[in-house]
Length: 236
Image (tube, rainbow, N blue to C red; front, side, top):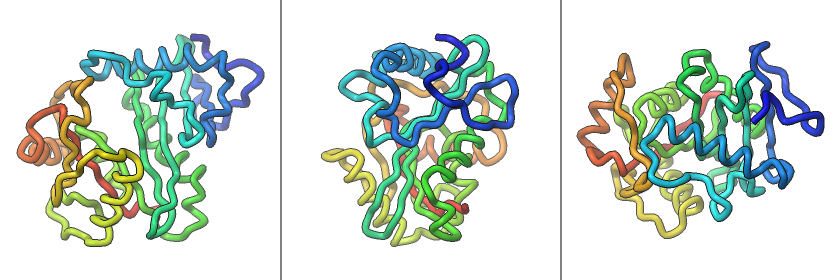
């Protein structure tokens, strides 16, 4: 995988001179000839960050479907990070769902996750909506949960003691049903059993809010194959 995608794609402006960043509001606009190499690279990053028993992205579960949007970050040695997301319209309005974001360990700590979040909110049109927008994610990673919850005014499930919001709980159920038809969501904890049967989360030493989230997750979903489906009001 080369440093960039070639002249047929236009890199977007980013805070870094040593990264090339590409944003695809419609992931199906990635050329067919580029998809398999990119998918292999994306699965390669997942295999580093997780204990993967099989590829996460496949031809049958492709990140290049038109329902997805995609952001790719390349370093001099190849794909360094990516973020897949969806923009949904549910009964309560515009909603954003983070389908998957991964950063190679060598590139973590440079603000890529925060950059992805800002770009997702910008590209989704969330800023035009007003002060907040429904923002969802599914994870077993305390760092990811804490990072997403940090940009939200309220979140369900409320791992850190905030009051539960019935409207958020309803949005959580509706989004999950739309995104993962037939997948049961255990209430009120918003637990999705066996969500990560093919990948296992690598435990780390957590600090700050992530350590509190890890303790809560360890109580609620001790099995690392399980995940929490969360929705919040993201500040934009």
